[in-house]
Length: 414
Image (cartoon, rainbow, N blue to C red):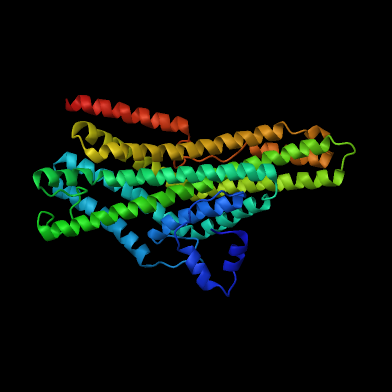
């Protein structure tokens, strides 16, 4: 487990071997942590373990691509090419083409997350330091530490749930091939993907195709779990910034009512609160900038995959479709929920500033509070590529649209 002294040791030039060992190990079993920064390090260690399986642990100092990175890149690229070839191979069997479309949509969001992780790798290191400083700064503050610790524990539980869901989705692809071979001695592929110049109906071709598809499942489960858990960690950490900000405002309200008042400490507290507010604004802007395209691709691919899985599950009794509906719905729900969290926390900031006892402050401090209130009313929110806000209302609208198009398509087929 990382701690503050270990982190300082790792950053020294004389401990490169220790750093390499800690950067590539599996996270230890979770203990009863007393400080939020310990739980934050544990969460980050868990995400890095998932990402390292695919060779995309961007927290490694002087990160360089390794054989796992190139393997992940090869699987993503080759899957996209196979999907295009398979559509041509199975045409005009639309059931097979729709099945391939599910794989293509999941691969598309994986490619986007891989690209963004590599391009913005320095941003993730910056975010790591920024969040760690927040947790370590308030390690001795009882209320702030308790709230931040609870937040990190909840994030960890949700991250584990995301990993379990992806494992469930991956394992669902094994049900039909195993059942088919057990009952009928007939070989079936995990995915309806065909490799060019490889005859999947022959014994050797079947082994090659199944081996590649097994690699697809492994990289998808670990890579997508790491990407979604990292987004969850960084976006939900905004709630920690906001909770600390609100606590600081409450402490300011107590200070201005003390008798006698300590004006110097009040001025320092107002200055600290203003800096924290600017930090929150900068943090939100960075999130929106880095995850702008990711949110768009995520929503579009999840919608396409969910619609296709629902269609195949109903019409063709496609067994993996039932698990995929759960996984893709959870993915879409997660992103929309994160956007809602961002919106709600911004509302809490505005309300907290408005309820501050600013009228008991001196004129310069009153102007600072007024400026914060003005800025808080023009907050940043996550969007679906700038087309629609990313929140629970959008999630409900998407689910309604999927159901409407699905019923219309079923009526047309019948």
